[in-house]
Amino acid sequence: MNHSLKWIIAIVAAVLATPSKASGQATSDTSKLHVYLLIGQSNMAGRGDLSNEPTPIYPRVLMFTEQNQWARAVEPLQFDKKGIAGAGLGASFAQTMAEEHPEVTIGLVPCAVGGTPLSRWQKGGDLYQQAIVRIRSAMKAGVLQGVLWHQGEQAYLRHHDRRDADRQHARDDLPPAREHAAHRDRHQSASARHEPLSHHARGKADASQRRDIAQSELLAGFLDKLKATKEADGSSLFDHIALAYGSNIRTGHELSNCPTILTGGGAGLKLGHNIVAPKDTPLCNAWLAMLHGIGVQAERHGDSTGPLKEIIA
Image (cartoon, rainbow, N blue to C red; front, side, top):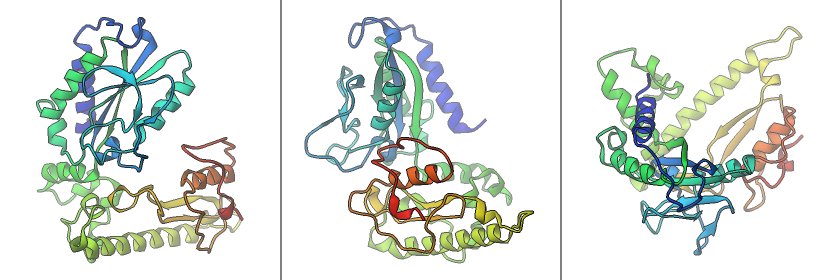
């Protein structure tokens, strides 16, 4: 079993081991408050830009405050690093759950702390213990429904590197991005992990660019294989797929001007163009356009405001 999964199960088991009684803090019927624990690094804590004023999330979404009290949920949800905590995934998750389940209230218990290693979230670690204390307190008014854990890849890779350092075939147990380490080593040191490079200062800019070049070469090779793989009717596999390559954030958690490659002939996309979308266009507009292109007529996706028409052929 994956170690991360073991720790999530350990958290759930630890909180379920303590009986829960209604306290009346949020609702008199504990079954009507669905509680979710939010843990991990800065991607869970949230670093998206917000206005100077706290931003309410949704009428039936509550947050467990730093003072261990239930209150109307506002962004930023987290309080790990005051002054830089911002918009995160917890808010959109909670709103979606509230819309899908109008009979209940959604309660978020934020515990994420930016830049923290997995070791502090293991059983016995300080952040693990703090999360257990907070979720047990929160469950006096509701029922734990799930744990959202968003951890940076650096800690994940280091965990596996320690476990498999003496094995030449370690890459078989790692995510696909590590399978081409030998290829990428021509461009950058094996110790240059993706997550710290994405938060680079000037000293790491060159390494970050080399990483991007190496990844682009891997993508190009993958696309060549798709085009070379022929179907029975003479078309290529490339003609029948829709592929997106990029990220929803830039260096330092910036959410604007995210470079994204959209390709493949399976979604009716406009290929071979450099398209600059209007300012403040949600990236989810591109995902919505791709969904429509493959036949999924979703009304919205995330914070989309409509399909990005500029990329439709």
